[in-house]
Each structure stands twice: as C-alpha cells, then as structure tokens.
Image 1 (cartoon, helix red, strand yellow):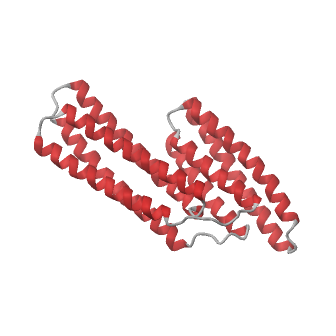
Image 2 (cartoon, rainbow, N blue to C red):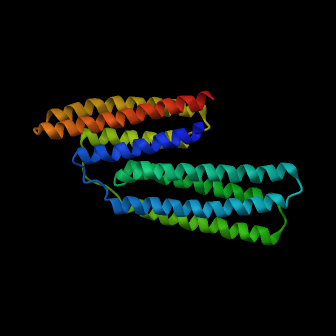
Image 3 (tube, rainbow, N blue to C red):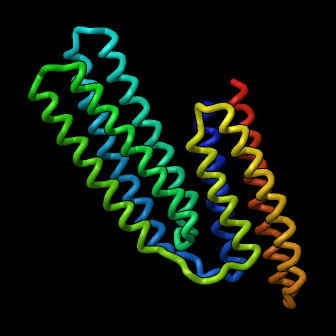
Length: 249
C-alpha cells in the first residue's frame, strides 16, 4: 500500500470511529440512508471525473507541444487526486454531516475538485486546437460540475442548529481536522499543522469524554462511551503516524 493510500485508509477509519462515538454520545446520528446517499453521490462525481480525465488524455495525445501536453496531464492527475480525497472525506464526514463545520469542510473538498476541473479545461484549451476533442472535454467537465452541484445541495440539507455537548464538539473538530489533513496531502508544512491540530483535538476529546462519562449513571453505557472514545483516539493516532510517513517521504 503506498503512503497516500495508507493515509486515506486511516482517514476512513477515523470517520467510522467518529460515527460510532457520536452514537454513543447520544447524538441523533445521521441515518444510514443519508450517509449512503452522500457516498453514492460522491462516487457519481468520481465517475464523471474519470470520464473527464479520459477526455483530457485524449486532448493531450493530440498536442504536439510537449510542455502544453504535460500541463494537461498534470491537471488531469490533480483532478483524480482531488476526487479521491473527496470520496474519503465524504466517508469521514457523512456520519456528522448535520454539523455546520463538517458541511463546510465537505463543501470545500467539492470546491477543490471544481477548481481542478477548471484547470483541466484551461490547460486543454491552451494545448489543443481540435474542436471535437475540446467539445467532448467540455461536456465531460459540465457533467462533473452537475454532479458536484447535486452533492453540495445534498450536503446543505443536513444543517444542524441544536447545541452540542463537549463530546460532540470535540468529535466534530477531529472529523474536520481529518478532512483538512487529507486535503493537505502534498503540502508538507500544512500536513504538519493539521496533524498537530488532529493530535490536540484528540487530547481534548479524551478530556471531554471523561467528563461526560462521569455524568453517565449506567456503568455499561459509560464503558461503551469510553471504549468508543478509545477506538477513535487509536484511529486518529494511526492517521497522524501515517501522515508523518507521508510528509517525510
């Protein structure tokens, strides 16, 4: 498994553990159907970007200028990576998409894909004079934009206005920091910053969980809460370690 994939896998585990913890905290967790819908829509974005990348490669093959060809190929790779990050972030944040911060983070991941798509179109137009190839690429880019718009609309339907407990607040920060860490792959300095933020948020979570557990009268419920917190703490620790490996390579 390469370093990028290891980091994405670790992020997915953080999302799963975070969803369980929110449930243990007594949160009216986002229902499974809504989570599956978000993930399905993110995968629809991925399918449309795959078609766009294919069209970009076709455009690149028709370009005689090596430098311009490389720009198209580079833009296509960046779009594929941004889409991969979006899928992971959707899995991480979908259990808590009723939190405004998590919505904001996931919408930001969508915007990163949109920006990457725009760069493909600009690079392709500069590199190729084949109207048919550019027309096909433009149609593919429009399809990605439509899929992103649908996903963003679905994200915004989960607006949360209720007050949160300390436990839920800390968990929300961890999920948001995880998404930010995924989106900072390739930027070593930003990855260090986000990894530290994630580690600090985990420490805050441990403190918040202990306070909330002390208020829990049911010993079994208290144990389940502490076990879920430990699972999330372990998952975040694993992700921080994966991030260290990634930015030291």
